[in-house]
Image 1: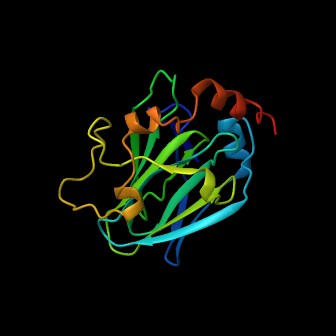
Image 2: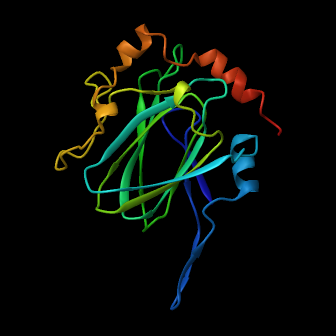
Image 3: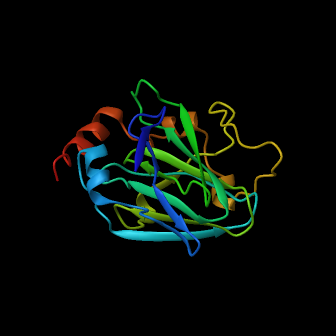
Length: 200
């Protein structure tokens, strides 16, 4: 596997090695040893989610209270999505910055988002199927949203696709509003929590 850190510190792009022949293709979507080498800790798998989206569906920006937060290891097993990591950690040198990875069935990349980052993706094809490993289970009382079309974030979504948001995401606050509401994770506290998992 090739691992590359994104412009949002802590977020990783993982490109697996594929082995193909006349029967098809084999690859390792997730490998514990390689993940631990890249992050300094093992992935605490608690829940696996799968979402299927039509072209234009935009999900996110989602995040969870830290601690415990929710780390995600995300890949696309059918179709294609533009997956985005957003630094929403108050006090971070890269606060408000984002980076993206194309997840598809060609390169079969994955993206890792540690606790404290915002996550969103846009389906580029019909029936795009995203599978993501989660370090914690779904807990609605600690889940939050930021509007993915917030002009201040200026995420570069493809301009030839009309975004379709859920009512919940459509009503989400901007990054600035979420900060005023005290919803965003703190950079130092998040780093301390993530560091406490090193070596595990």
